[in-house]
Image 1 (cartoon, helix red, strand yellow):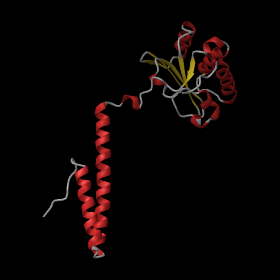
Image 2 (cartoon, helix red, strand yellow; image 1 turned 30 degrees about the vertical axis):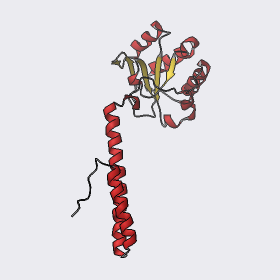
Image 3 (cartoon, rainbow, N blue to C red; image 1 turned 180 degrees about the vertical axis):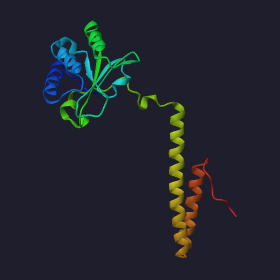
Image 4 (tube, rainbow, N blue to C red; image 1 turned 90 degrees about the vertical axis):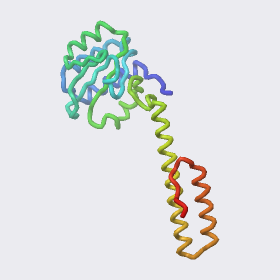
Length: 191
């Protein structure tokens, strides 16, 4: 479980970020400064990845990144109008706001990573269906069977090359046991 990031930590990070990076849209600077000057609002700000999945989020980009300069997401609507997002932030100060900052090597930046939180809206492995689990289990079983069978067949061939009847007999028994333990897998045809 991740420990919550305090408003003070977020404030210090934003101050550092504004001192070190230049954003593509000047309105982005206004928004971040507004958040800096309203500490109570920072309690509701969360730095995340994939902000597009959040119910209310802003994506801001610096000049050193090739990403989109600015996007505001609200309930599946998207705008590049920073003034609308600023208006929304001022009218809804206690509503959670998710921020994604795009800058060069952002996810390698220790300071940024220290204030990042898990995005609770991001689709991930929790969305795996029961059918997906069954398919994955079947694939794993088939792969394991094929791997073991191929190894045994190679060893059987080697025992034949070495004219080692005892080892050959032992390996054939192992192969039969393997095929019995995986009833749904293809078998060698007996002649």
